Length: 309
Image (cartoon, rainbow, N blue to C red):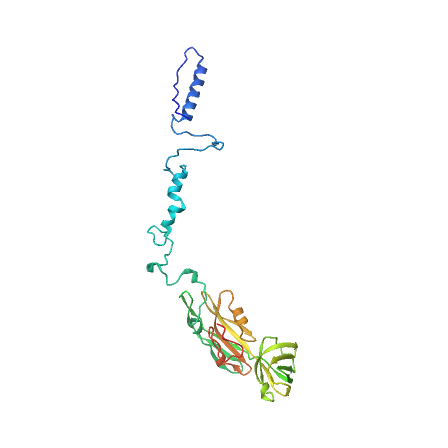
């Protein structure tokens, strides 16, 4: 559309005054739509039926229209990419530059809920005193988390019962399978560990993982003795207790007893933000100092595979 001249408001003296008033209103409306009366204000939406709006000026106010040319020259990926590079002087304020020594953090917030690891997880040692029951003391200790934060743990004292033992009714082996029948149901399950002691001959004795439990009073374990029968003796059970802490909580929690110290049992104790800080192994003879220790430590000498963490 070319330029349109502004319309004037001639008066027609010979015409009816209502005609002159109406003509004046039409003149004002046309001049307003053309733009001679200032900013054009629309009272309804503008539809161009697929036509373009051309020659848009550079925007100034937040509500101004933006042409594709201005958008491409100022805000396109090609224009902004160099400004977002790690070495750019105009990089994002929240961005951490990996190659900038001044921006490296000693610890980050994403580590806040991570568990501790060796050697921090090994530094709390239970104090075991044997008697009719087993007294276990977890001393007050400063514990360090993975992000470097620390917490002073509250000391804890427990009196723990010794596990049961069961007299052996019969014990015999065929090939590499030993079958044990106890005088009462032992409550053992396959995969658990039990200690055989006092059997004659002594070749049956030791601590073994059970391969099967066929009856409440009958179980098997593997030991290559050929065909052999034994007599006497007892089955000793282990009780394994885990002491664990939870993030931002100074309380030491007692978990157990577990029948043996296995990977599955340790994983069960390390749930929902818990971290094992000490392990205590108790047999019918009392607390076993040599098999107990810091939570992350391998339990050296344990027959139940304690070296998991």
